[in-house]
Image (cartoon, rainbow, N blue to C red; front, side, top):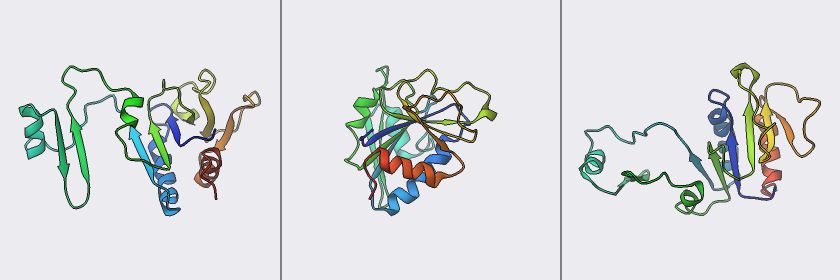
Length: 171
């Protein structure tokens, strides 16, 4: 998988965000520019309803760009439009060495599954051919597909080493 795009999938509570946090710091320390797309099934509140940008969105603005000396963000109101596809959202991001996508389980991109037995849900890697690696706190099953890599979720440096090699970003 020589790509600058990797999906990170798994059931809620499996540790996707925790793993991404553990990977982002060393990736940034290497001087890599990393973008993240996080999908949510819930409504997203960027500012409390009484703040100016929220009031402008509520008044009918299609997009509001909120800027400060520390960051900027764009809120785009869909207003009955379909949710944009992952491909459409990727075009809105600045260039990066790597884009990590949390969620978008159905997307046709290479994926890393975060799998914990304690979550009590079936693994995704058995039915999703896009999953190229699994980071888990359980031992690898004997019947693991040879095209998939099993990683120790409790050793984020192992996951990082795999990620750098798999994406062609290793030194």
